[in-house]
Image: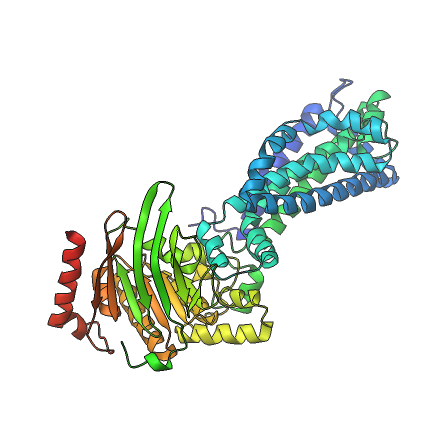
Amino acid sequence: MKAVNFLPQWLINIISLWTLPVLVVVLWWFVSADSSSFFFPPLKNILAVLYRDLASGLLTSYLLVSLTNMCIGLAYAIVLGVLCGLIIGEFRALREATSPLINFFRSIPPAAIVPIVIVAMGTDSAPKILIIALACFWPNLLNTIDGVRSIPVQMLETNKAFRIPFHLMLWRVLLMGALPQILAGIRIALAAALVLMVISEFFGASEGVGFYIRDKKETFAMTEAWAGTVLVGIFGYILSTVFLKIESWLLGWYFQKTPKELRKLDPAK
Amino acid sequence: MTDTNNKSLAKQMQVQNLAKSYGDTEILSNINLSLEPGEFICIVGPSGVGKTTLLRSLSGLTSLSAGKVMVGGEEMKSPLAEIGLVFQDYRGSLMPWMKTLENVAFPLRGKGIKKAERNNKAAQCLADVGLDGAENSYPWELSGGMQQRVAIARALAYDAHILLMDEPFGSLDAQTRLSLEDLVLNLRKKLRISIMVVTHDIDEAVYMADRVIVLSGKPATVIDNIEIELGSERNQISTKSDPRFVEYRNRVLNLIMS
């Protein structure tokens, strides 16, 4: 039953999705409009500065540098975390042997290693990628292990009885069976990557969005610092939205519905 | 013994003095039985007696504590290509991310068979269980009975001449159950395979089997081995109202209840 049936469904969807965010922005806009606080400049000024520095190419090039680091770090973490997770999850002995170590390392807050890595490795992009990869490795690893563990024993036994070779088992059974948890892990990692992307540029960096925020703060350009922060927020939102789309596309079987493309091919479904 | 015996492709399976313990608990002890080529046997016993453990031992999924399983005169050490397995829980045994056709063809992929060939074979086996047209559905789009038929098709596609089924119809509704019993009987006749079904349903066992094997005791042993002489044609109504059927059924029931 539709509560409001004089509006098309897509419009209702947009309204219900966007009402609150728009309200918050509008509220922020008007509450801050006459702000004379040094720390909380008007939103209008923040957005103007954001537009100015994006248009001049300064922030755009910084953003590109930061996102490149983030994507490379995240990619390393996903590939290594998932691969190790599949193998550790599959073999009980390995699971038991590695669990104390994993539990120790994953309890270290990733941000805590930033100073050490920067001092040890210098200020180019390699240490930043390493920091992001390290932070993102753990959620990927742990979720993949859990994902493999959640595959029904009967499914593993069936495949064992049918003598499925290990490589097929790995890619078609373990990876696919663990995929829901793997993607949940990547989502956690994505949030961590964004945080570490910024923090890793706080120390001894000369470019990047994190550098921009810290640099502006140190020169007391609070409006610019806010602009950088808002930009990170916007990108975090875009990334997680895109990721959710990818997730629901990859996990059609998990949510027990056929992907739209298939439904189009076969209207009977 | 049925008249299809001499044409069966299946190897004889022989279980010799099989025993299985978990830790100090002895589940099965001194089990001797055989599955002749083309034969259909049902293993019944009170629940928790170790029927599933026996089937797992026979499929090579679990190691034996003593004794051996011989298939075609050779001792089985690990799962064999001749043996196909069908579990009770089809939801846990079919992979929800694969369409029906891929689920059936997957074990063939493991054997290294080319895609076109394995898909042909899988489609053929799906047709054998009456599921032509369901190739492109996901298992979860099918009913329980259809999913269990997919699992049966998968075992057939694997070229298993010996089918081991663990409570295959246990989680299906009564009507689906009856129609699948007949489907399996027909497959046996058509494909001349040997079938061993573990069940707790005595009617089902007597209705389908050439021989019913009764397990009982702690640890479980074979307490009876009953030839079911109801002919090779079975019918849900006439067979089940045959006085001999009732007699067999009561005999098994008495053994299990005592």
